[in-house]
Image 1 (cartoon, rainbow, N blue to C red):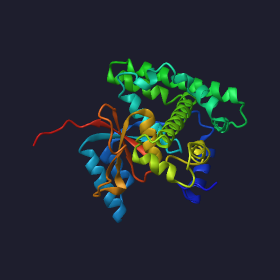
Image 2: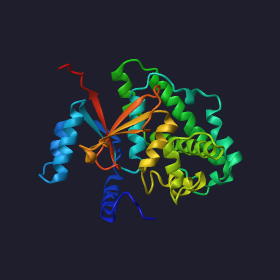
Image 3: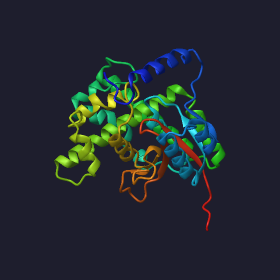
Image 4: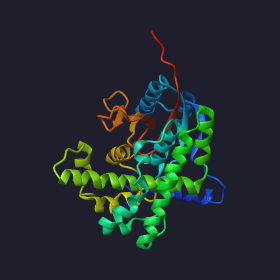
Length: 300
């Protein structure tokens, strides 16, 4: 299957890297913080137009944030960066996680949509329907438990330590991404049905289902969601879907768009006022890093 995110050489490099690192005990998911301009100078030394634009982009971000944390650049990258930021700043369990029927989602959806049996779980194929339902339910329960635990931690240092610890536990971390992907599918089904029933839906929903490869939720699952984390990452329109699934606004500094209207992009563009905002940085809309340590606003 062709990967629209990466060229052949990059995929080959990653395969070599995977072979080299698979024996190592632990792969860092979110690296410790480093000064944002130091990071920029190390990454973008040249005098090409691209390097100059990136440096200017980083300078603009540095007006707001002092540091950056590099996020492991596999195909879960967008999910990892978004979830890490959401958990790092959470102070309460979101209402959608408190809902009584939250953990019944897999069962409810599977009873209505037979095609969900083909949902692919973490590299393992050929599950029976009941197993899929039970396993996704476990992932959703884990997401609720971790979110609740971290939201109850008052001290910012302790909260950060709890997040760092969670993202060092590979088994739990990847289970959480599977939960997010399933929530994205659930959100897509809701939007698709709302549109069919003549209810108002956000513009991105039309774009999501206007693609040849995802004209309905079943196709979206087969051609996109099943591949996230394996052979592809999140496309732009799926960043909107993730934002809606989490009921968080995702604010992204898109450095290669510096000096254009799209330098700071919001997913969704017209966010709900009560949604928390998480901030990410990207150089290419594929790999996302995390800006941290917001600078204090200075009054001129």
